[in-house]
Image (cartoon, rainbow, N blue to C red; front, side, top):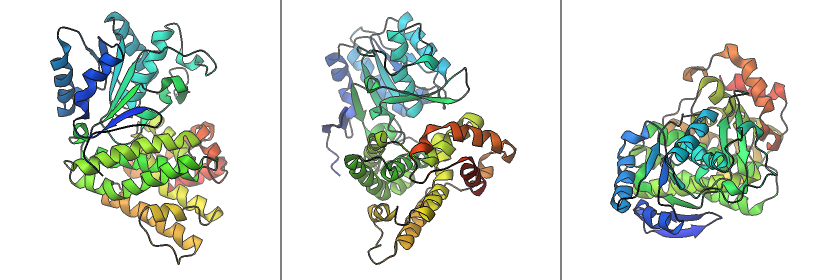
Length: 386
């Protein structure tokens, strides 16, 4: 893959390549943004990545103001959106720069809902309302995982329910995205791995989702191919800009692809975050191979093309053998990037099993799993993943 700056739109206008962050002031000016609110998390403000952002905005400011809201939680909650919107109004901001992982990007996009309608409670968000004219938003991911920068939704835990809610609307799309691998160089290997497996899960689950969308299928398969070539490299050498750039592209591709919808892995993962505070990418990683095994038992051959995308030779293999090789490849990759399977190993208390199952059943993602699942299936998958 070229290390040159490249522009594309699918559907969000996107700038990809090292040095892309330097184009941010130019893009803000074209959107009419003079006083941006940078939405990020508290840990990121002390990193080299944030210092790069501050330098770019500072050099371009010429007396104009930019402000920071850094109160985003690792699994964002409704209060994050409320507080961010309050700072936006108090500082008289006129646009958003969402800078960080999926949490910061989701909060940055969602703040615009409360700027347009300050009286709104997120639990009362309705798709059918008129959401045209949201504040301008530029997304700059510092991780390669969620793909939230190109997504039409924000995932926020609501105060009233204590559960994650998906706020979905095409108007939530960012106005511009910058995928600069230089801002991901300092991401620790552990987080590089977890976010990378999140991207892989998006690609796998969107491809196997039974909804007809062949364009998304192609995007998902190429995303898997890029991850197979790049994730291990990015984890072992954080300065590998080509690998970092390919992972950023793959993460965005995963999010484009899952407009098809997702599957049971995500329904299992979401409660692990809300109940135990587990990183979403890690939660997906700990559940993915078990869901793949479950699905392949009912639909042999489901993962054949995924095996091919990973570079595996399955031409002379049976469907069951091709599936087994794909699943083993996922398990091997998890080991290579330092993720050990076992929910209990990562702080999950089996005594909360029924709480996990109850939330997983209510989660809509499993409704587009290639194999229908019921509460007993989800319980069995948790037990296998323990």
